[in-house]
Length: 128
Image (cartoon, rainbow, N blue to C red; front, top):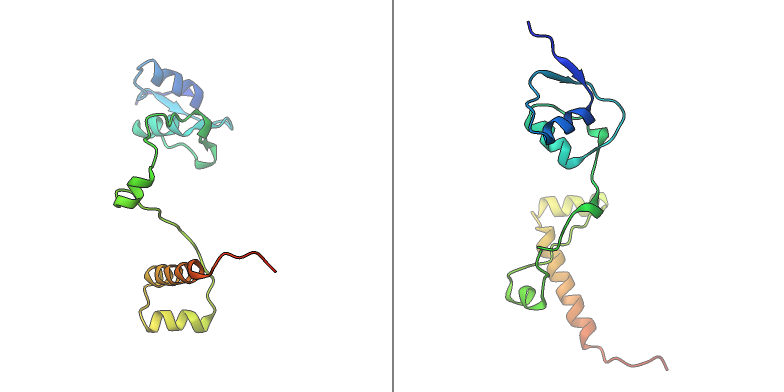
């Protein structure tokens, strides 16, 4: 049986960057955090990183190649806004939704459309 060399996660990342194979090493994690990208790279080598050690540096992500969403994209239906919400319905409403097989997304969309159209019809007058 081959004895593996014990290293920590930072040493493993350096070895990966250098193109080294990690099969002869055993990674023992200390409390130092690891960027998500490095955790993925280690995972590809069957080294599971503890979740509490993984962090994501959002400021380091380059979004420059992501195209901006234009009004035309939204109007043409190429892109759509997807709004997630959560609601705490009381038991009576929950039962009604379940029993009537209500599609809450469709219902909310119709309610919002009707509300918008109603509000839009009111003349914009200042308070008198």
